[in-house]
Picture 1 (cartoon, one colour):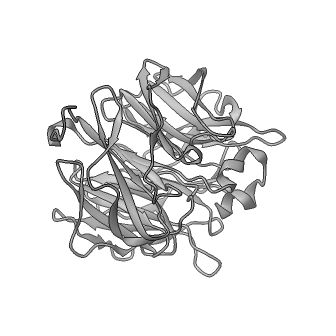
Picture 2 (tube, rainbow, N blue to C red):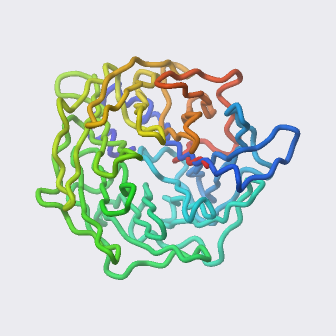
Length: 396
């Protein structure tokens, strides 16, 4: 949040300045689930509350129509501490080991919590959790198989960094020795960290400095900066990012602003074997909305959704084989006072998009059909009363 204020101080990111947070959502595979009521449960959605003091994660059961109901016992204490405000990042909560474990940042205590996911959607702390994040104020987590990297935002006396871990089969998060790499931009700057689909590349975004950090990942899990990294973003505030699920060499990054106006764009990059980024086609692609801060791509790689926090809309793009984007239109998010959604997640079956609506104290539920979105009746589903600012969401 400090990054957003320092970078822009504009109406486009007003919702973030007011304390809205990114939502981390995950959906679990249906084979791991059990029905606890007359409504069949096919997955779950999890939300890192970044709760002040004792941090919590809220859990929801996902029905076949995509609607959500709170899981019994939710929200669950995770052991670390939150900040009680939005993080302004993407990816602060992730599933790991085929959904067996959930990893969540505890930004207030500089820790990462590891929780076992149970069939009924409940969460159980793994012995030894939480663990130190390897820096100050963790904001985002990247997971590939058992390799984990955390983006630590830093503060006035600590550099922002990326730190690696190994997740054991029993859920212990073990630091990867000598893996920490300082981010070249300013502290309180990191927006996202993520692996590509085969774990050979890792990218981090730096919001205030509008930089993209790109790395090659070697066989032992260590990072090697790409030639020319960090790369200048193609707009102001390089932020939310996603690798294409069907092509590990295509990367998409949101740019909340452009110089001279508040209309955002989405960039598309080819990523070489050494991590070097090159622009695709006519990138960046116009979003025609205000502050596209978070992005999500359908599992089939055909559609990208950009969450426009300033406009209270979701922009819908199709993606062609080469990675070029075509804007299909925008869909309103059911919001309060013009404040739009923040961090999104898409269910693994590609049928539903969920968006944090902290201003409405709810979680928006949308169905996906082709490149179109339709909000479900009764959306948004309420957030727990104890959660005042969600930090991220994940679904399975």
